[in-house]
Length: 135
Image (cartoon, helix red, strand yellow):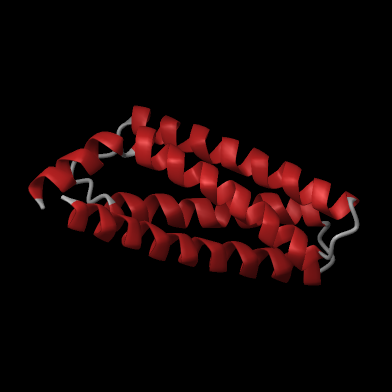
């Protein structure tokens, strides 16, 4: 059972690293093209969020059933909450005079914590329990 939890956490972290690379890549590409940092954050987070749903659903939590509206709504709620935290932290760190890189890193860590907890307990929680019982 512990082995299954560790594998699932490892997969979640791998997907999270990919999401972060997509988020940072899109964010810094857009800001290099003179898009303001807050609209760039919305676009970059959205790109990472789409990647997150596809990979976490299919690989991390191995959901076999068809996606339903409840799961998608729960996923969106968690990601909107995480995005809100990320957005507020990015704004706060920028206003406090931190560099854009430091601001983005700190904001990303805060958002990732919210995202992991929400996905683990609410979005894919039932599926995760079933996987761990099988392993």
